[in-house]
Length: 425
Image 1 (tube, one colour):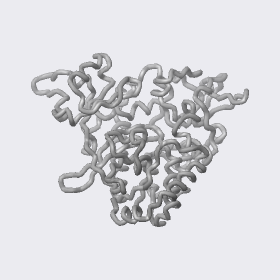
Image 2 (tube, helix red, strand yellow):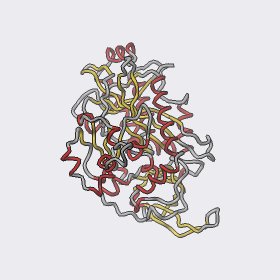
Image 3 (cartoon, rainbow, N blue to C red):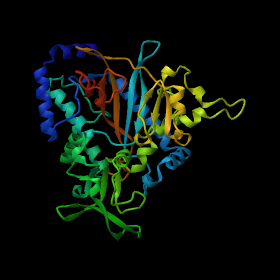
């Protein structure tokens, strides 16, 4: 997107340098990076990344500051997963954007989706550094957002995850973390912050203790080599979709209040999610409606059906389940038969959304490639070392040339996969 930098990188690219970079990433991550990594970083104008970061903040605050919305989204959380002791705000946020070409020729971001859940902060830092070192990128190029340097990045991430606790009592939990494709990020983050990586299946309640407010709550701990280790704060990387899909039986109940802090309270995964999209009204957000609303007739002569928010051309629509445990994946250009086949009592679990055609903006030796840009934010507690505000830290880029941009959908191709965004000053 910055032509001179793009041309220079393509001209200097050497496959053997890229292979060496991947080996170095494996060493830093203490495991093999099993998902595709693109041969190239991306070079974006800082103004475009800043615009995306501002949009993500504006949209998140719309939701977090709307009591009516929060009540509706809380009611939509499946009851067994409606966790106790919800925090006032999410600690983490990701906002994914594609790029479209406006009528005046300007490139503009369009929201794909948002999620109040952590992403691969640590791995993205390591990947960006790997590109810089392996390909001798100009030292003036930056990849951290908000004016941060490396020390500031890790301080702010640490204040959000550890929040002043003894790192020995802070755990990163996931379902079978050793088997996750995000294990490289787990290792990098745990190594830098001194926290432990724990399988959520190993977390169990222990005897009640008196809290600072006089309540007696049970604590949580994890067992290792026959010994119980106390947990004071949880960096939550476990998603309910996987717990449901794999039928994981936990030793604790999300609905019980424990004497533990969540860094990434589970409820926020639902609050800011695909469920949010119909509630958002912004030029960067493609219109969306819940499928049950799409089927619902107008409430009166002067109240049009919500389907009028969407284009009539079915080729411009996509059908999405709100959560993976709802059933099928994304359907492009859904037919009347496909929509009607979803049972009446399940239609509220699906979205119809306008499909946006993103333009390929990255010129590579194998052809123009689309870029989906994810802005990664943290929102530390007010009492933390840095103070609390929603702050963009770093971006993540996924390169692809198909309908789906995820790294799993672009295998057996080159110059696609996970990438990093650099910008000049």
